[in-house]
Length: 324
Ligand SMILES: [Zn+2]
Image (tube, rainbow, N blue to C red; front, side, top):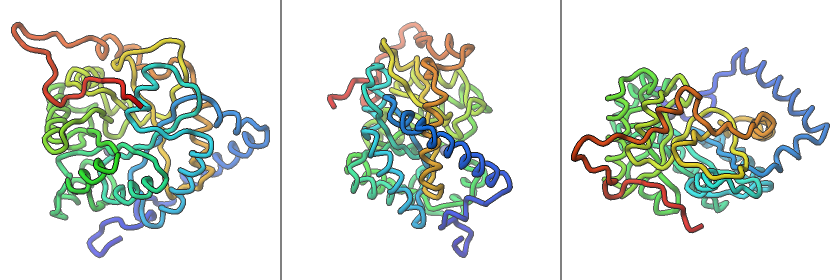
């Protein structure tokens, strides 16, 4: 920790607990079994689109983060977030693809983006405009404690974000202020999506992708999911583990809730790879979908008020397939 309690090292955010030891033992056992039978290599080589995400890459996590990306790159083709989204919507997935994203807009992700430049990988960084560029450490501390629920860390500035964009990375919305979207009213959820989109568009010109905070079903709602698409976002991502398998048919943006596998620079390489293999092992063809009860709401187009224009505002992100 820094002298004022900001996390500067991976151990500052990852306390080794009894639970983490049990989990690690389980991963070792299951991973060894998959490797001994040859199943692991088969799973990793399965055609699909695999999104991984992280929060931070501290100095002491860099080497292992790089090794993890190199290992994934050996068996997968890395693609940009927009390209990965397009592949999933089309269903035409002919090989293993991977895509890296980061949540929360922490300063260490700037270094991560530079490291990824070295490897020729484009990432997507999901930020909360309420905290981007905040230099008051007390404000950052309060935001971390009440919204992120982990120790405070330095955050990206708007210059950092612009710099990442200029180097070929993408910037997505992670709400305006990182609330639990499962707890807020529909009006607040819409505000969070709108304010975040407006702030990013104002500074960067456009925003296409959204990932909700904390990422579990209980941290979101069908109405919030509908609002994401009503407001012109091209994709909506969770932090629910999984990957996206090929399909014989294309789907619409509203049909898909993206799954992402959490990996960490401080986890052993083979643990990170294990999570990818396990997601393939557990994959079913239809697990890109929203929960059954949510589908009629998320998939319903917005009903415009009489006289209201539903044309997207300039710079808003109605999905257009990228050229490459
Ligand atoms: Zn978050």
